[in-house]
Structures are given as C-alpha cells and as structure tokens.
Image (cartoon, rainbow, N blue to C red; front, top):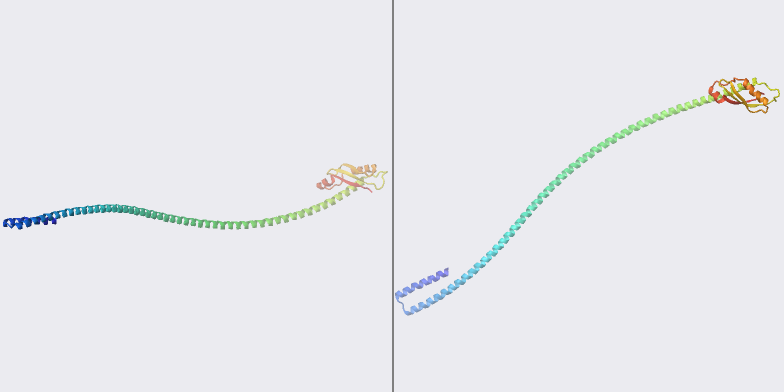
Length: 285
C-alpha cells in the first residue's frame, strides 16, 4: 500500500510538472528528459508493481504458511486439547476410581472395624460364658466333692455300723453257736447218758423176764433187733446174730416180748433216732 501511494504521488507530481511545462513551454531538451524520466518511472513502477506482486505472493505464501501453521497449530492444539480432555477424563475416571476405591476401602475398613467390634463383643461374651461355666463347674465340682465327701463319710459310717453290726451278729452268732454247741454237747451227753441208762434198764428188764432153758450152755449171747412203739411196747423182736443155740435165741426173743413195755426215754427225738428200731446184745450171764 505504501508503494502504491508513492507511485501515485510520483504520477501526480509528473502530471503537475507537465502542466507547468506546457504552461511554461519548456525547451525540447526538457521534454526529452521528461519522457526519459517517465519511462523510468513507468519502468520503476512496473518494477515496483512486480515487486509488490511478488511481495503480495510472498505475503500470501507467508500468510498461507502462517495459516497452515495456524491450522496445524490449531490441529495440534485441538489434539492437545483432546488429549488433555482425555487425560482429564482419564484423571477424573482415575480420581473417581480412587475415590470409589477409597470409599470401598473406608467401607471395608468400617466393616472390618465393625466386625472386630462384633468379634470382640463375641469373644467377651464367650469369655464371660466361659467364666460363668467355669464358676458353675467349680461350684458343681465343689458340691460334688462335698457330696462325695458326705457320701463317703456316710458310707464309712454305714460300713462301720455294718461292721459293728456284723461283729455283733457274728458275736451273737458265735455265742449262739457256742451256746448251741454247748446245748448240743449237753444234749448229746444227756442223750448218751439217757441212751446208756435206757439200754441198761432195757437189758435189766429183759434179763429179769428171761427164763433160762435147761439145755442152754453158760456164756451164750446173741444180738436182738427190736422195734418199739413210742410207748415202749414191743412190736417185734428178732435175733439178727445168733448165739448158735436156737432155743437160747428163742428164749431171748420171748424175754424181750415179756418185758414189754420197755423203759424208753421220754424224749421223742431220742426215741425216734435211737429206740424206735435198735439192737442190743443179750448176754444174761
């Protein structure tokens, strides 16, 4: 623009000068010089115009380059903005993720803390239950031990009483046995004496009833089995071991029958065991 203004100014000056030259009617040399100057001016103008055009082209190219650079920079800026937005989005996502993770960790920590509190409460409850159970078991053990001790004492007392009773019973039994033994011995002795006495009385009575046969030899004897009634009456009399003399044997049997009733013990037991059926040796001489 400055170049165009300068050219126009130059053309303006030339036109003004021509007017002055015409009005003043310059000399031919001056005209020729002016023509030469105009040609130069035109040439200069063309040169200036060409330079201006070249300058415009250069400016246009520069502007295009600048535009391209601007577009490129804008594209890079957009790419950078997009990348920044992506990074910001990524950062927001990451921040959200971190916040979620932090919240999750916080919730997990709170959950763990709550769980620990519950676990502590549970352990405390279990501990208390164990203490209560231990106390119950201790009380039960003490009660059982006391019960066992009392039972043992009662059992010992019972055993002592039983032993004392057994000793008393044994002593009484021993005394009874001794008493019974003494009574038995006394009864045996009495029965023996009664048997001896009864046997001697029976023999004496039978001997008194015996009639000696004329043909009997001196020193004969026989064994007679006698069956009696409780009254002493003779049911049967028979010789079980003969003297060798039949007449003597018959006289002995007759003597027993004639002596009936025989003198037997009044004790029925003694009679039953010794005199219901008995044998005795008949030896009159």
